[in-house]
Amino acid sequence: MYQTTAVIAGFLLLYTAVSGRVERSWFSGPLSFIGAGLLLGPYGLRLLDVDLAGGGIRFLAEGTLAMVLFTDAANADFAVVKRNVVIWLRLLLIGLPLTIVLGFLAGSLIPGLNLLEAALLATILAPTDAALGKPVLTNTSIPAALRESLNLESGLNDGICVPVIVILLDLAVGTQIEGYAPAHIVQVVAEEIGIGLVFGLAATGCAVALLRATVKLDWVSEEWVQVPVVALAALCYAGAQAIGGSGFIACFVGGLMVSWLAPRRKHELLKGAESIGETLAMLTWVAFGAIAITQIYGGLSVSVVLYALLSLTVIRMVPVFLCLIGTRTSAADKLFVGWFGPRGLASIVFGILVFNQQLPGNDTLQATVMCTVLLSVIAHGVTATPLSRALGARAGSAGIGMVA
Image (tube, rainbow, N blue to C red; front, top):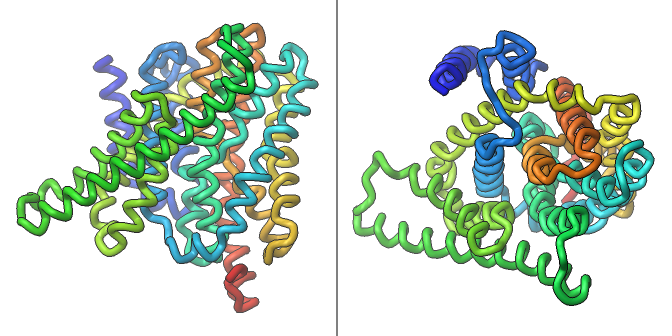
């Protein structure tokens, strides 16, 4: 334990020294972290001991995703979000289901997977990752409508996929469902999304009201001003999970409420949470790098690699293109949004939930999810900066904001 901690702490110090230079290059942070994990893991120097079956990596990945979702939502621009509601709603309500269906059809052709496992694979890989898309989401040369729509999509699609994962996993492991299946499905969806939504709004509303009152009384120490957001993100996630809801939904709607209720000071308040989120993300990607090759090796095949490539291209891009027909987006904009649907933290979290059930096609599932995420980190990390610059230059030369 101490050796692993020391190695990771040393790497964190080294990366901090060159972080600005890395962020300005094509070699993204997550790619650096995964490379470090590969180098230090069991297939490299053997300095890291990471167990996929253990609860530690799941806890780390869930905590990272929760913090990133909260801070990304809190940084949302409500004016842009409201003006372009049609884009992100179409991505969630039309594009996401189409992506799962197309992924299921492709997954059903993979040898070694039954239909339920193919459906689980499609749902695991449907959510996108705002953390991996950060170079795009923070690039102000890209039209704000695209950035905010991608942010809203990535923030809500994993919460929407949670009940689907739960239902499919119940069926896959043979869990007895009391009563009629439709009633069970409605119950799971209502609990996961409804409880998460209500708890996130309630917890954030109470927290903001409390802090406003204590700040007026000058009871809050300056040294503690960034702590409440960190605590609130943790409360939203853990509290919603504890009472049967989706912690991811709670975190995202909680972050949106912070953006709405405290727009003036939010950037100051979010600094601590953003730093913690970045650090947790680094740890998650290092751990992923240490185990990725091990998990991929056991079930790697031509069909697995082909599915991973299709997941990042056709399975994602075609539904996005179709669902945005009729909006004021050009073909280039549609392709850009479709391409920047990186798979990352949500897929890792959902994958761990499914892998621990030891389904018949577990090796193939692990290999496909890990391979897809690894290829996504490489492909999206390398292309984020140049494609963002190209789209920004095109929008600038046209003199348009893309969408009103």
